[in-house]
Image (tube, rainbow, N blue to C red; front, side):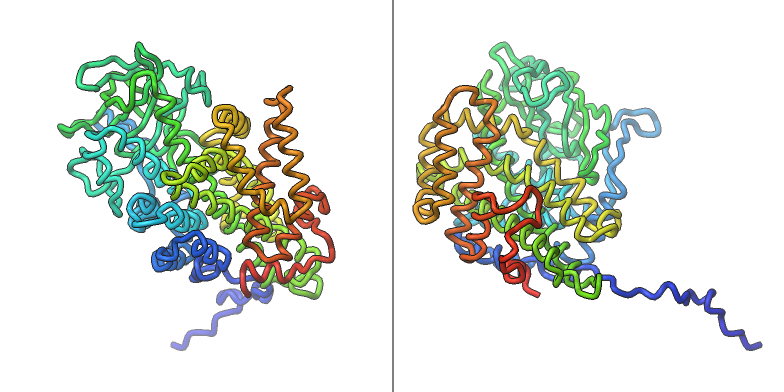
Length: 553
């Protein structure tokens, strides 16, 4: 018997369901090839050799596959299983398979390790990879950066380094809960803050009792421990000599589980794919790292590197927000024209492009300083001052930038199906991690008090551009006056750091950007020829050219 033709309703051919004027998803492109500013910056900073790896990663992070994995890993977040079905305590965090696949991709690409394994300019080369990765998924970036930074700390203890560093540098991912000797690769987390102290690590009350051979038993509660399924953790506890740094393996050499009790997972605003937890030490075995009573100083080295990573991550996230906004505006029509042809939208996009470029130049100049710090006192001093200055400023700029990019997409930007909702929720986090804004600004003041030559290094870095640009020269003189006045200096710390950050960014734009872009940056950021939101640049600016050099059509 012949079947009747299906009705239009049965076939789903509703007349109102024709999809028009909707941009296609920005997938299966290459984030490296689409970023001329990144490519030029990496080459200028001396890491041309990373291009094949960066191009491969650029294709990966912009693929439909990775974007789907990122969505899944954040929609189906980690879950704590404190006990098995028989009642045994197991303290296991279970992740969606997408998270494990993302971890394999990131660690397999060397996003965590290239700074230590490259033959030269490893920090710049690795920064290119980390910048690209943060355009894809940010939860995985947390264990990536902690593992990266832990290498330097563990190298200070030869016995720990011999056992752990080769596994931390491996371009592999092995989530099995095994002793490090039995693993293909390992990751490291951190457990520092406590509920009564927060950023004040000297308020830590966790106790450490020595049991011989630089081993201790820890007792205490940690308020934040991210990536609690890592293979080892750097942590702080109090000995008779004061706050001391320790390394806590998750599995003991005999294969038994160390007493590291995961009490609960934090329900965070964003960063959903990455587990953050409260943990309890109850006679937990640990090895001392550094001298007793020197825990804060030991951890400063690691914090210096994780803060650097935050600078790079923020620049990458800014780029991701910008690209989504431009792509949408180029493919969406409203009021008779493509959005990207509308003068006010052009102003917004050009303003976002300036912000993104300045952030990128800052991040990679800092990476070059890290590469050369061992051989150059000037570069070492730059790492000391620019790291907190850039960390503070980029973390403050990413939030309004993510919001503005989301607004470019309208309601579509606010729904979870697109990447900007996740980026928006992610954007405040790095401003809190590794020191909130006030902590970072006070760190800048401490750095300048302890090493006044750090300010000289920054002034020398900016000086040549300031001599050619009166607007920058005026800002720099204003910053110097602020620093010379020691009255109420802590209350003015944010003003000071903001001026230092803008001075550096303006100098980098003058030195490396297109003249029109540098001039517009100075006019809007230094001379006040703009409003208090994005999209308030002077109307005579060549908006289309600014956007086009950022993301070629």
